[in-house]
Image 1 (tube, rainbow, N blue to C red):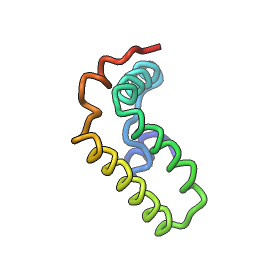
Image 2 (image 1 turned 135 degrees about the vertical axis):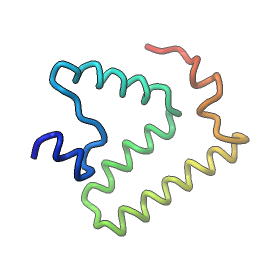
Image 3 (image 1 turned 90 degrees about the vertical axis):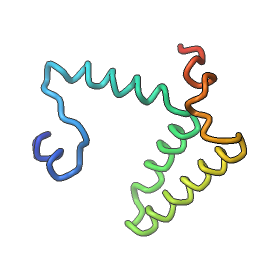
Image 4 (image 1 turned 45 degrees about the horizontal axis):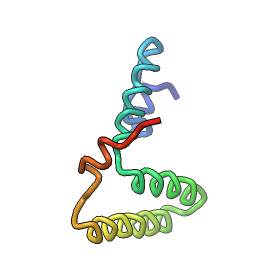
Length: 92
């Protein structure tokens, strides 16, 4: 299937023309780099783990991971990923 069809059926959340692809990828990278590191790491690990799971097992695993992230927020007094320490950290 092509990109437009993938977008239409929900397999892709964005579609770019060839000449806009690099700019689109850079924008997505900027958004991800501004996210809370623990959330990004756990999301990547979850994607790797659930790849071979059946739907219900993958859903339960994802819910457990979300609960972990929420408990990390509770331990730090709230969703700290928007605080300055994340947004103003040194970038390499």
